[in-house]
Length: 279
Image 1 (cartoon, rainbow, N blue to C red):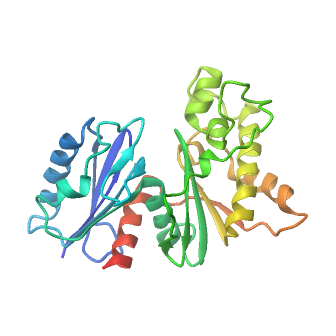
Image 2: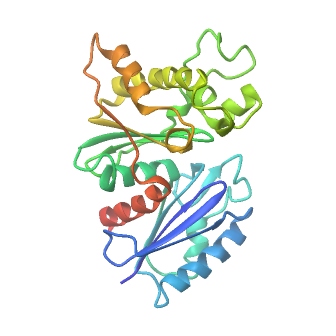
């Protein structure tokens, strides 16, 4: 048996295979095509190479807001030519096997909860801070139920707009994401040295969001991932932990706050965990 997992990001798509749903045997990656048809063509090419006798099951994540049927994305500013089409439906033209699709942040969080930094814990809050801010709540090794999805990056923090001014929606995402930093300062985040006070300020802003996560989700652990967390330079998790503890110490014991361990492979491991749960 060969199981196929994938992770479709705005820049890069990763594909992996596994024989036991415990380890990844092979990983390949390619630049994410602009259109769904081009993406499916490239995915099929790799799927057929990794599973020449056809895959037993397929699971993966994709950036963007999923459709109600979870068969594609409803909208996304980057993968807009993938939106409104059924990715699962296109793949099922070639593969008559179970195919599961989740949001990329959700499936990366599942990977970290089951195989990574949250392994062994029951309730995990995962936040990814990169070009945007996403996240998910994981309970007992499964993505928690949600009517639509989880969007922690959209929470309002800068209520009086003292940081972002009157023209930018004062969300966590617009405070700490890589895109937001570039728009505010005119340089890529990786061009700002670790010694710059900005990184400490970003840790403080992110801690405000983690305070809300603790109060709303009451997790055993918060796992932080994404390029703004695991890159170089980066928002230091130790600083986020320090500020979060200060914010909640009067009414709550702060949970474990840890850096993600699986890096770019988190979504692929999440696909393995999803298949273990669904099959």
